[in-house]
Amino acid sequence: MAVGGGVGGDEDSLVVSFGEMLIDFVPTVSGVSLAEGPAFIKAPGGAPANVSIAVSRLGGRAAFMGKLGDDEFGRMLAAILRENGVSDAGVTFDAGARTALAFVTLRSDGEREFMFYRNPSADMLLTPAELHLDLIRRAKVFHYGSISLITDPCRSAHLKALEVAKEAGLLLSYDPNLRLPLWPSAADAKEQILSIWDQADIIKVSDVELEFLTGEDSVDDEVALTLWRPSLKLLLVTLGEKGCKYYTKDFRGAVAAFRVKQVDTTGAGDAFVGALLSKIVEDTSVLQDENKLREVLRFANACGAITTTKKGAIPALPNLSEALAFFEKQ
Image (tube, rainbow, N blue to C red; front, top):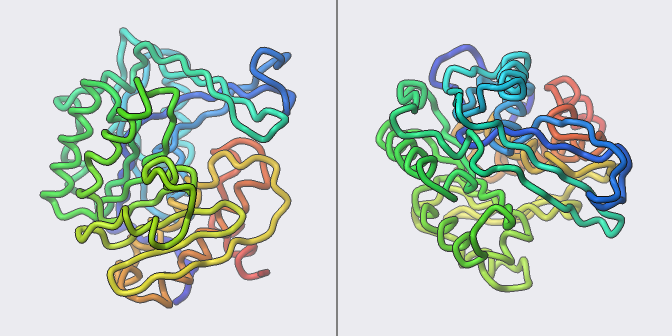
């Protein structure tokens, strides 16, 4: 299967990502705690927004759906979507709430430390009535996370959007993107994340999320398969520098990662998902053909690897020519 080529302009090749877009503030010095950071630079982020930009950079058609504050930062984020070729037709603005902020640091022990400013932020206040339902109905893939399930009214908006996407026959793609500090409790996070598990066609979890959701300190097949549902077409477990594992009803396997000098892993999972969706939207037979799927997952691993070689999420997401050049050199 040729991995190159953009998704044409046809309407049904659209990938809609639903959820949060925010600004990460990252210390100018790495390896320090948030308290020790001397200064911070702003980096646009939010996993569903990253995925939509990843799809667009790779030649696909993407739209983002969510709510931003009617403030300088919210307008800046909408402009970043447009600059990256992502439709902001599904974006609404809240005059009474701020755009979400997160202070993020990579401590010297390699762990990320988060501090969120969301009480409440605009993304949490999206209502079902504000959804651009026609945008969903026109799409081929509907992608989402779990942060939008934490609190109403956004939770109700998420469930309504899911229902409309399902009725319209879209492929549903779910990356839980666990952020424990945002949830009332770990038990609540697990319950809500799993509450929509049966709806998805494609689910991607990291090794850390697999351990959290199963309670098992293992990425063995039998552990991963406890998350399998008959409604699924593809379950993926990403293993960082160890690549990824894939499971379908007919076959399973693993695809190795590419070795690169890592600078910052932020956004690597979103690049992986964006690359995967940009290929599936071109050819859904990838989900039934193991050779095609393996090639697409190698491409997704390549896009994830490239993203780790630069700082930040959105600035590091590869475009199609970068991705192909890297992919073909391997």
